[in-house]
Length: 169
Image (cartoon, rainbow, N blue to C red; front, side, top):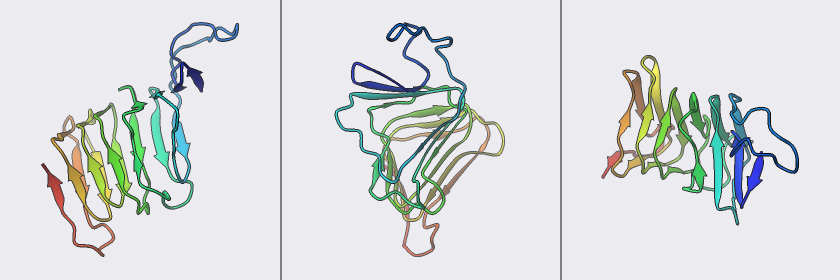
């Protein structure tokens, strides 16, 4: 992790510039990044830079987040990830993706209501490239969901308890 001018960098460094006299060996990362907490609150942070050529997982520590979560526009997610997972099976809390996600692998989202307000793009050619599993509804606003030939799985009412819908306005 690296903080510069109120911006948190996880994965790739902002640059190869020395920090407190330490010069990094590499400015790039291929490490998988896992952020695990029951509630993410980023106050007084202007931007969170997450970038790697590994995978990104943002999930609750327990079975479900405690409050609705959003991949805030404060997140700069780069487009080098080989997969992104947001939430996990059993998560009942609403999740929002307010920005475009471009990934060289699969995108999986697990939540109560899932709101997608940006394009989701996976370059996968086989298997399931984009997987949205909602216990209630999947809501979209001017969103395109595309792969490079892989399947797209949209599952609303995965808990079989609520009337559900797929909405794209």
